[in-house]
Length: 248
Image: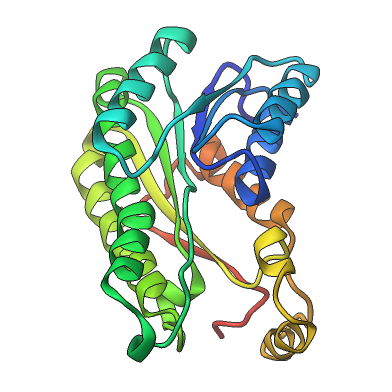
């Protein structure tokens, strides 16, 4: 199927992990894909080639998603190169995990800036194009810890919870112009980031998951595809938890 044929998607933080898989999944369904990351490296170059091998236009852009001016510049450049943006996936994010008693101000500020301000930056930069076109789908990557909280992740949890409130507000603001805004809250997803965790930590996480396994980037990408496509045309302001039931 070509669920996204003729559409242009912009995915932030996509050179690796979940963002990379979302970019590839969108391309498999016919979308041209622009993507950003903090620096150009082999991962960005490889993803460009993989996207083009799928028969679509794919281009990576170097951009600090937490920088307001850079974000607006890169979005304008994407529109110049691709002519439009139909889908935005706000995926860029970092962690600086520790208990609050050990957390310093920089660890708090950086996570809020990268995870939450980046969503504001890109949504604001893209909305003018979507409002003019009277169509668009914005997908914000939150987390189950944004829904439920987690010890040792107060900064990350706060940033991801903030995304949920932002998503609902933007859905109400832009809905009259047929621009939708939804969020995804992944649970324990097996990526390079989680792969660095000690085995005993991963085992404890999996014990809390009814499906008794970690999720894959493909699991999040498939839900992103649903929200990006017309299959979800009457959904906005929602949070879909992709967590194997760990929030139940």
